[in-house]
Image (cartoon, rainbow, N blue to C red; front, side, top):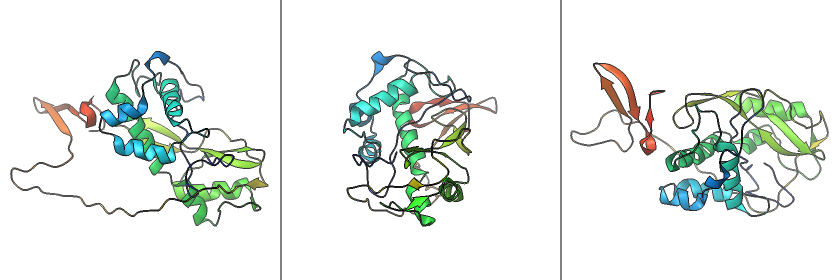
Length: 246
C-alpha cells in the first residue's frame, strides 16, 4: 500500500497488505473458520516472534490505526483456507506464526520504494508518471512486472505475484509477472507524498560458517531423517516436519 490520506507507515517505504494464496486463476477461498481469529500480537509474542511483530507495527499498519484487527482479518480471511499445499485448516499456532514470518520475509525482499527511487521516481505533489516508466523501474529491480493500482489517478497499491514450490513454511517463492493488469491509467499517474517520518536503513553483512568446533552446535540447522540410507524428511523451524526442499 501507499496510503496518503491519512498517511500510514514511513515516508520512504511502502506498507504490507497481505499474502493471498489463490487457485492460479485469480480466485481464492476465504473465511475458513472465523471463530479461530487469534489475538495476533499475543500469539507472536508468546511464540518468540517479537521481531516479526515489531516489524509489523511499522510496515503492516491499518489506515485507521486498527492494526490488530487488520492482522486478524488477513489471517482469518486469507490464510485459513489457502490450498492444502500452503496451509491446513484448521490451523495450529506454529503455522500461524509461520504465515506472518513469511509475509514479512517476502516484503523485505521487495524494496519497492528504493526500486522506484533508483529510477528517479520519488513522491511528489506535482510530478506525474507513465505506467510504462513505473513498471520498467520496478522490473529493473525485481526482474518481473507487478500490477499497479490507482485511485483517482494516484498510485496506491502494487501487487507482486509468485509461484510457490512446496509449502508456505519451507517452500520457494518464485517471482512471476503479474497475470492481470492493475487499474492505473497509461499516463498522468501521481505518486503523492506522505506526511510523517522516514525510517533509517541498515546494511547487514552475513557470513557462512563452514566448520564448527568439536562438540559445538550451529545456531540454526535442519535435522534430516534417513531411513535405510534414503532421506525421508526432516524437522524445520517451529518443529515442522517436511519432505520437501530439504
